[in-house]
Length: 356
Image 1 (cartoon, rainbow, N blue to C red):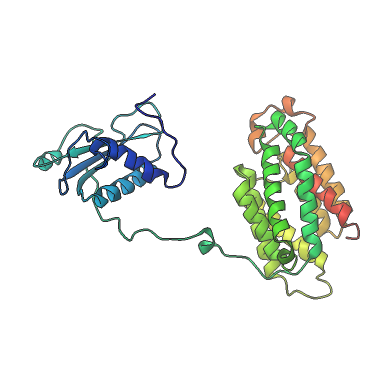
Image 2: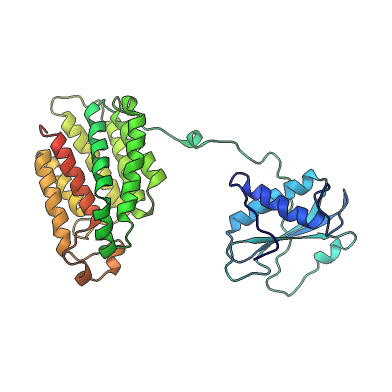
């Protein structure tokens, strides 16, 4: 539908769309014919209409591009109206109307009782208001952890296992949730593995940076609540590993160093996620595993506790997450997929860290 269909590149999308719309009204000064005659110096009023479902911030992006394009063509804008004036249900789109005010500008400022009419926005210069930056400009790297070559290998092995069991996690989540747990976990594991493989030598030298890189990978690849909670987990863990590097006493071993980091991550996840053990979440596997380590148990014992916690979710009623909306009868016998992923992670770690 519509007067014309075009393929538009993602780069400079708003600028291209605005130019197409404006040129279709006043011409481009070269090839296209003008529907509205506008000469350099004419006073223009602009109406930017939301067709129903476009976010307000995107309307103002259109406004900025429109103002700058008309300014380039020496066509001053004296009034700008932005809002939902004529909609098409919840269409995600925008329309632009240009009006050559000539000597009629004062009439646009008359008061009206029409409820949906919004007065013109203040028109200020858009020049010199943009700030060039990259993502790294606002990135604070957490650094200062102990070196640990084995940690990267353990993380890569866990990632491989999570990718491998994606179908199982998806199957369980189709029963207990909305079916996206497996793909979300796989996507996160894939990005983490890529990040760690590309930066392996540097990450082996600093445990805090390792956890920070994992958090970055999670942030850019995992959606939903689980993505946010895992990012918080590894940020808190990175901070703890950086702050406690110099506790180099005999009683503060590498094992205790990592256990404290894992514990701080768990505390952050519980604080911001609001869940705890017994609520049918991944914490039903994570908390027992870390508790065993804090009590001086081995990684093998921790893995056993994590798997027992995971199995307990098969008969547990949900008190958090999407599974909270699924009947206990439907979920009976099916473990929580997040808890399965955590139990598998402990099991993989236990096979590598047999002496811990």
